[in-house]
Image 1 (cartoon, rainbow, N blue to C red):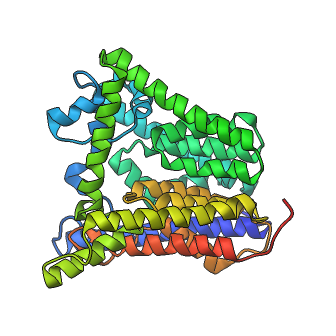
Image 2: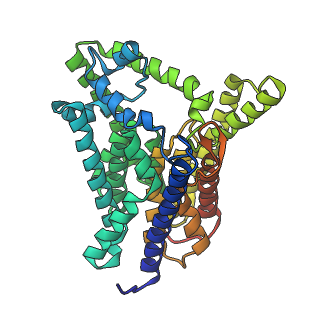
Length: 406
């Protein structure tokens, strides 16, 4: 294989670093399990083995529950905070038995990510066989994808829609709003990418994209109403109720601390430490959550101003928006790190200036398993490393470099 330019060299370096970090982590956890007799969490960088694939399994069972998918909570005690279009997207898999459906979903996820990785990054290697080989290595050794596969979370569908949107957006396709609107209707946070349209002064696309997301959301509620026989208003009420239960359950306790990478995690950690030392938290969670919400909104608005008004390279704006999407919510479990792929690919492909090796390493860290030190229970040092590296990558993207002609 002949390396023809700096971009190809950095692509190859990225694959080698991710694969090496994967091999080291597997060896570390294998030694912990086999030679020291330790179980979870020391034995794996993934989630608890006894809960394997349950994000998919529970969503699929909810899809088959009597009435609406949200009735699954009253039947099993498992929250279903997903927006209804998620269940509509899963509905075609209902023709299979649950294990077969999961295998189809997993196989589709692997093929989709390898294809996205190849056409986004590895096609630049010029040799198709080498490109696909590197794409496969990249995918099967990437921590976020392995965590996503282990959980079976529907995040993969959002990721595919986002990849389709960013490709269409870069090609100035008018239909780019469609996959973005569908992604927003599944999980709200992709809505941050609507601001890319404002940055290009495509105000009509911003408005139509927002309205289309609302329409897709309504279609989701209508579809569940039609197949369940329940009213749309009742389904909306069930959905909102379970979303309201999700936040206090995961954002105000250590249940949302492990395998998480948001800035809110620092509040949980600090409050927990103070409570352990003094018997009471530093600040009551209800108050802290309101203050954090204000801070998160302010930080996002500052990033949005950068995206809309700054004359900067497009990759910087993609990094900034993806970072906001990952670190500003109350909870953002590690399967959502798969979306950081867009930041990595944007830097590797759309950066027109000299590459920075330290920055390349920094931007690759969220794709590496780094849970070598446990903080509390199954929460590891990764919750600190991922949030810091993503935040630093965003700050570098915003404040480094020169203005460009847009």
